Image 1 (cartoon, one colour):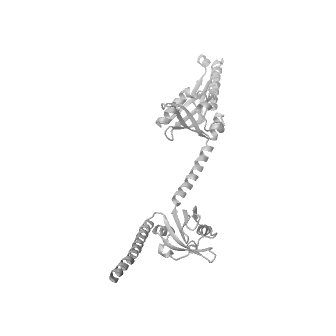
Image 2 (tube, one colour):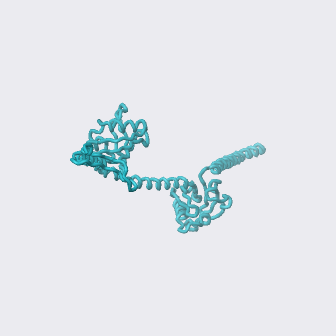
Image 3 (tube, rainbow, N blue to C red):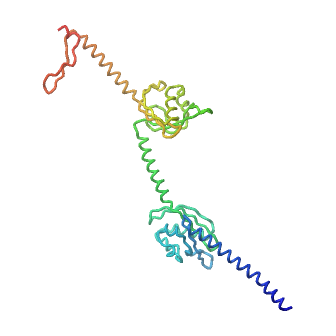
Length: 322
């Protein structure tokens, strides 16, 4: 009787002990799983123990775990940082701004994401800091220096080419084609123009950007110019040509090309004044020739080279009778 009770007691006691072991095993298995994930993560991942004083104020953050990626980012062995204060690991900071942010997250529990520039290495990091437990801070770190440097290089390039764009003596305009439901080009929209565009067309930038070509230049959709632009935007084949645009009463030399599908850009030069000057010169030469040939004296024009008479360049009509 007592034996059965004893066995029963042993059996009853074995149940909670077995359940505890199972729970411990699952916990350890879960820890191994997450550690494996953290160890192989691309981003740097660090855990810090939050140290507080008697009043609950955070006074330090002690590193308890750093994954291999974090060590590569910090350029030091992860195990060398374990047990050390975060403040000692970022000793390059003079203003303490990074440490202050981490302390704030540890104190308030409010997660924080920000971009941090490390002056000692001239690198940029995307930082995410949050509390995973009341006394544990997680610091997720990603090196984004390559992306930031690329953005800065692109910005510098855009500034440089924008200056070339604005200071060019040639007019420039960027457009996108507008199509109807059947896919037929029916109009275009101005996306950007430079200062020379204003000077050579007499049309202000603010009256062009975002406007349709038919609004800025009524009737242009019925011209050969529109056909050329449509073909360039659709086929991508550049066209170079001269044209007289009657609404502006100007002569233009135009290069039209497509920087991307269904877009076209134009670089153009107004040569109206040069054409007019050439016309005046031609008329002056004609008047001179008429006067030259109408004189009742025989005249000729001879080239002088090296002090010696050269060949006769011109004779007037009366010279034949002399």
